[in-house]
Length: 100
Ligand SMILES: [Mg+2]
Image (tube, rainbow, N blue to C red; front, side, top):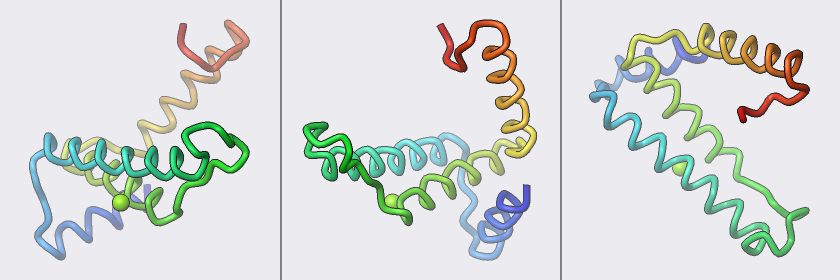
């Protein structure tokens, strides 16, 4: 995945490699920032149609996820393909993409 290679190059260039456990914590923190945006914009769910997140926070979460994939030597594109195939199978088998 091109984006994973971009993140990996950024980590290399700026000497930002860190163990996967810390990348996972960073990912959780960034997803938490998305949740904070969602709760604030929707007034804690009182106005669900107003729910919004900042694009840069989505980017932070994506960066953190791709950095985690890089530190784990996992191909994010292959992982996404695998996930899409799993959801496709579930839709065919159960009519829903969600797990039970
Ligand atoms: Mg952020």
